[in-house]
Image (cartoon, rainbow, N blue to C red; front, top):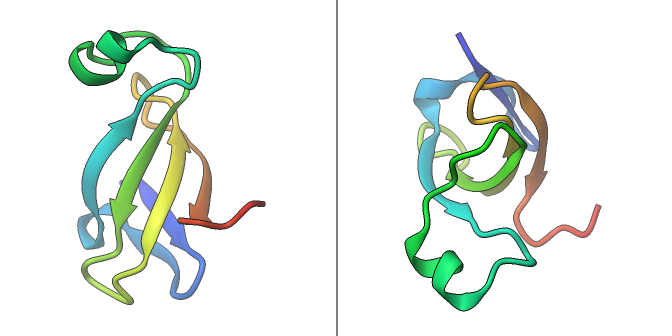
Length: 79
């Protein structure tokens, strides 16, 4: 089972989180940002919310093909 590490609550099962959207790549054009789906094996940046806990908004970097979570940051943090 995939787990995300909330900055406030610690490691939790994925069922406690709600996926909201995948953020477009920074170099993508306007059309790609709105209409094209992420379809590659590279890491993606996604918005998640810890709905089963502290309700924090998180920025998650993960590989969509393997499900490996690379990092979890509090939304708005610069680290």
